[in-house]
Amino acid sequence: MRPDATHPEIRVGTSGWHYRSWHGPFYPKDLKIKDFLSYYVGQFDTAEINNSFYRLPTEQAVRAWQKSVPEGFLFAWKASRFITHMKKLKDIEESINLVFGRMGGLGDTFGPVLFQLPPMLKANGETRERVARCLSLVPPDRRIAFEFRHPSWYEETTFRILHDHNAALCLSDHADAPAPWVTTADFVYVRGHGTNGRYAGSYSEETLQNWAHQIAEWRQKGRDVYVYFDNDIKSAAPGDARTLLRLLKDGQSLSAMSSR
Image 1 (spheres, rainbow, N blue to C red):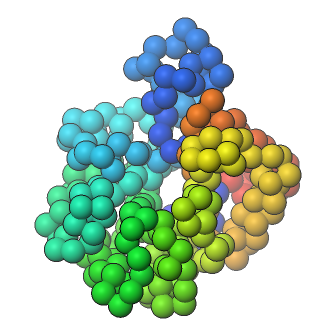
Image 2 (tube, rainbow, N blue to C red; image 1 turned 60 degrees about the horizontal axis):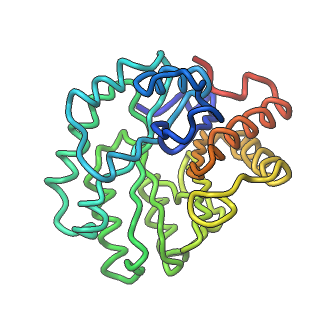
């Protein structure tokens, strides 16, 4: 369900948490892999599930995620690549129903859903209509974001389609097609892919300070904000997430952040 519009929230986390390379830099060296999520939820109040993009999670896996996190935690998750990359948003009603039905097992931890389109899928009349059709198929009480990987999507017709369905343009800095920071919904969805190619490179504190200022402005305008760092190489993502949270808390009262 959507959060209380009278108290906009800011949530910051990472895209995934199950990275062996984070042993030491982020996770304690003696922490067992099965306990990664339990440790993670002590640091952040949201995470983006990535493996739902590659395969449909089992009902048992979804229930386990839901039971492993404290009250107030939210999982964002990526829609299946079968829908976005294989079907390219064509004839997807059955798949949408299956995926949303399965992920509904997240219960109160169900957060925004990210549809990431392939870089070869360009914007034209037909493909824009597919996006609109997709948005009409998802449950109306779910928050949806679209991450485009081709720059042709960044124009007013696309923005209007998203706005009409209260869907967010994913504000991604992916090298294939970095997005303009245009808001199209009552929430904002940001993905940081790194400064040194895909999934690599930490952000400078100056850059994250600029992000913090912009995030504060969005919140002041009544928008919830979700930020996920995808630069998992060399544990950059959790480090950047911690830094951004610190800057946000330094710049505003703790009441501006989500609470659990």
